[in-house]
Image (cartoon, rainbow, N blue to C red; front, side, top):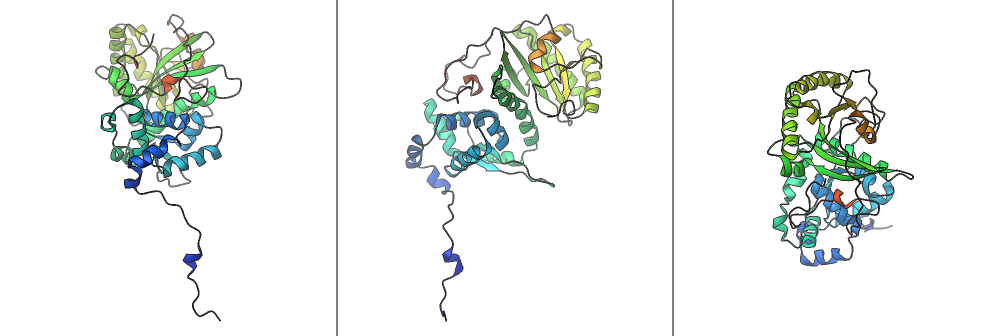
Length: 343
């Protein structure tokens, strides 16, 4: 008879735990990361720094061949303090894991750029606090419009490529004194490129306010001399129908409506609500019976719109194979003008 049995808890295998934050902030840990972070890891850190929050599904779309490979690597990056993760509450089912940049990842970016981490403008409290932000669903949804394009470009036989993706924050730095789009993108296919601004309407903004932005886009076009389509995404077909009336009225009130090409879509237009490349876009000043076009066909909506010269992809040591370096924007140490909008 065993009189002094070994407690069951002592028989359990060791459960690895994430090192304490004070360990992750040491010089020794950052030096250790130098030989463990891959080019893809550093590129992902830049993407998180620029776009704030990416879900595990979005990260798979832009950087990994499959879910298992992504989960294994993201677990490592989380345990190393490079990224932080959280999972928002959902009444039914579960949300995918959400990722933000953590301290070790921010320090790696700053050192790579040759600046003090304080100059990066990174705040761990702010990034982790996004889990409670009322703008979280808006940010993640808008990001999905662009990650869907990268996913499409990575498919075998794909002929198009997303060559630029700017966040609202970056748009605000360039044009915030006039208007701040929810995003800016550029798509390259064949012998042409098309660029656009995104207004991601989540159904919470008054339509009069949304329509009022067209006057600011007209002013931006006059200031820059560049006419850029504005693509407005809405959550439902009913919301889109009402918004189209308000947008059409605001467009007619402009002195130069041709300077603000506007097209709309809704989450009910295509099988995938956030597949931006699907045939879902319709000009505001066209009847509701007009055909919708895919993203590469935007030039057909406005035949007089000047398209861009195609971008010649440049090699980038920080971008995974097949990705354009402009998707990972320059950090604050970049020379002036290196992040300017190319024409």
